[in-house]
Image 1 (tube, rainbow, N blue to C red):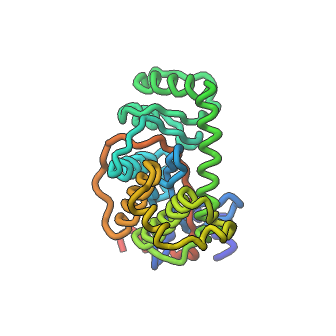
Image 2 (cartoon, rainbow, N blue to C red):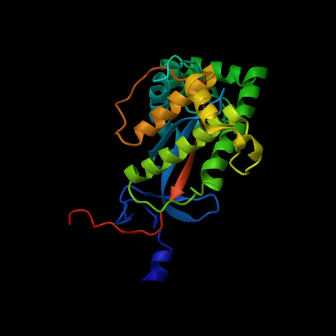
Image 3 (cartoon, one colour):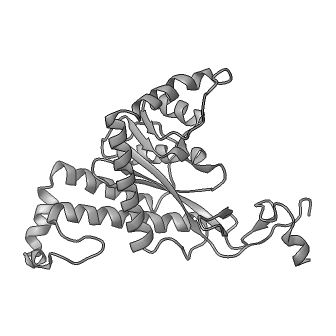
Length: 283
């Protein structure tokens, strides 16, 4: 039976297989060609400070374009708590679609989304997408658009390295979306806390313990400076960190369409381990 099943098409279908301890995980193909049960981690980064603005765990079904609205809603909610507003979203070409362009325009945001190379377009079936898509096409070819796209790659790869490589989050040992979300939010809060400490004390990179002499200063002075005389940037980071940590212990609110700060978006799949066949329909 194993030999016969090996040649059967769609033998890795999510309709037939599931993990008994984590039914919300979905089968997906990794970059090296292997298939694993996974959850999708998607995060948004503030492109002015480099802080993680939102972290969401979503289903892999539908791709990046399907998960973008929820991440934008979460980022808008988090940044709205610290009275931040901007009007720009920067993302890679995996997020580009007619629906994405219309959604970003409806939120009052300017899009800087890399384009695939679709060739000549016909807008007969979707006239509403022509204007935002053409505007995005024009913006990403300007000097400012190219600069933002380069900066997006820098900031997102940096946070991915801190969360997934240094933070060992490429594989999680938890099951269930809620448990994984709590783990990821705590990790993201720690990432922002490290950024805040580097901004205040200019020491403490994720990969080293350089500048140990600066830690010899009296602790009371450091705490007094942090608590009573934060700079505007530090104050915003503190408020954002507080919101991320608080959200670890409560359910996400309903969708909120307030504007977010300038955001860079990316996604990554965190893996599970094994899977079992689903019961046949009708059983």
